Length: 222
Image (cartoon, rainbow, N blue to C red; front, side, top):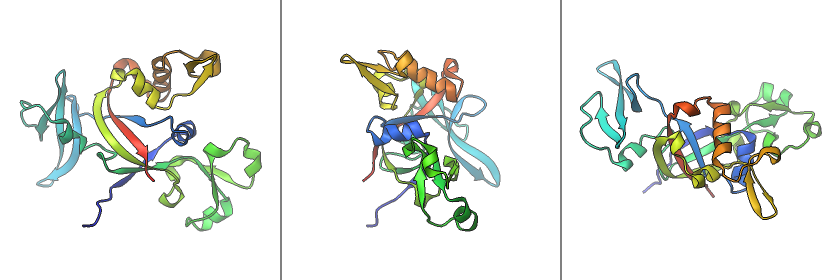
């Protein structure tokens, strides 16, 4: 039987790419899309020509199954909603899009495979002055060097993240006399949670709102 292959792109900043390559980042969290009445959107469809969504309620007891506005009276099993995760379910793969550098004259006439560098690897941009940096959203599949395999998917509030999960998010860390600190050298914390909160708010600016997120655990696919 032919192996099922489901691959989707995922964007990472250069510091997170370096954390993945160093083996320090094995999780990522992305905002979950909700309906106006607070239900988690699992899939979008058209039913009889009309737009419709398959969604579930997210209550204190966890997700409740409510397709097409049905009654949310039955708890939704974890493996049921995980298979609707936007980036895939366990066993699926995500190919990493990151900032990359190309030669502008080649890129202008041919987007096919060509010489390129990765911004995450460049300490001094002057060493690649003949190249221009392209944002990660424009990276084609052929230029991606990292493929991740999803091993677990969860839906949770972002503030439910544990210390262990915050470490797995690839937060910058350094050691000082045998003690590990998380964050930049000038403001490190013994606990990774404050630094994760700072990074989250720098991107989404909604930590205090405690949004629902898709939490992916992954490993580098080889």
